[in-house]
Length: 79
Image (cartoon, rainbow, N blue to C red):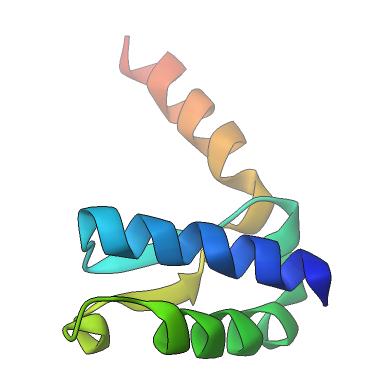
């Protein structure tokens, strides 16, 4: 539970500072799915300063931990 709070607190800071339209959770923790996503979304909704929180979507990245590998492969073929 403490781990989720740390992740959610970091995302809350990001939303408060940058007001992004979307935050994607990637890497190894993204495989947690809704088990991670729901508590993070609830925490952020509770502690975000902006009234426009509804516009910031928090989602799990669809490429999970493979995004870096795929990006590197695509970058190497673009040269």
